[in-house]
Image 1 (cartoon, rainbow, N blue to C red):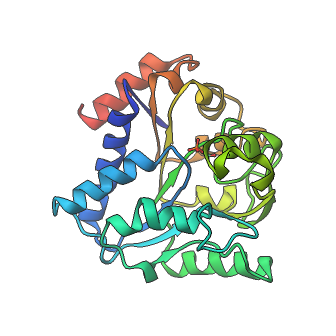
Image 2 (image 1 turned 135 degrees about the horizontal axis):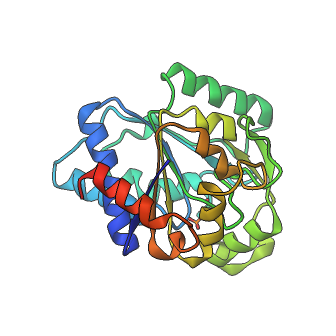
Image 3 (image 1 turned 30 degrees about the vertical axis):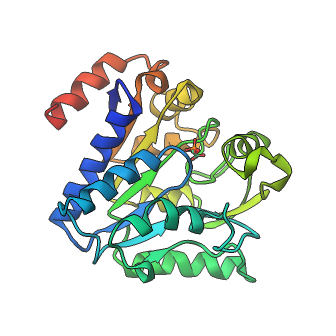
Length: 259
Ligand code: PGA
């Protein structure tokens, strides 16, 4: 696990975007795993800027998103499909038909989840998976108590995630946040060839501590990434503030990145 610690979230987002831009330039048919939430927005803006500047093209890239709320249509302004269209897909030259988000309205959710995994497999697997982290240490919607080998399935949100999501989205109304979601599993995520996790602010410090230095435990599902051999954590100083070896991580990752 490499932990890149930046002074600002802007700087961290730029470095993470540069890593993705370079990977797409090297392999124009890259398969991306994408995340929603407030955290990746700046990185998505940087990725769009690179397209605008003609540094890279996503015309042949395919993407699969981590999760979607059960009960929301893709046209709902709080759905993750809508979020992705607005925050990334409309701003880059990816073909909408090559972007995939789980269907929150699927009648047979198990079938939907199985089909999603099959699609990813058929595409050759995810090359780079983008991740945020919940304040309770979740990745995608894999809440505490989820098997570290879980596969894409219908999951149940914790009260703290519902609170976090209402604060940032749903106009602050907790009662409007769906209590269930379809989510890639921890095992599914860990099969990506490379993972890039972003975390900003002191509200993420405990989660990052658990992810990087905690025991590998289903209590903090992000800790499963400790067993991944190409995982990059891009965070600001506040999110990294509780790490015991933060100076060492910062020096090592900066050396590897040549920054
Ligand atoms: P956030 O959510 O980016 O809005 O903080 C992250 C997550 O819950 O994975």
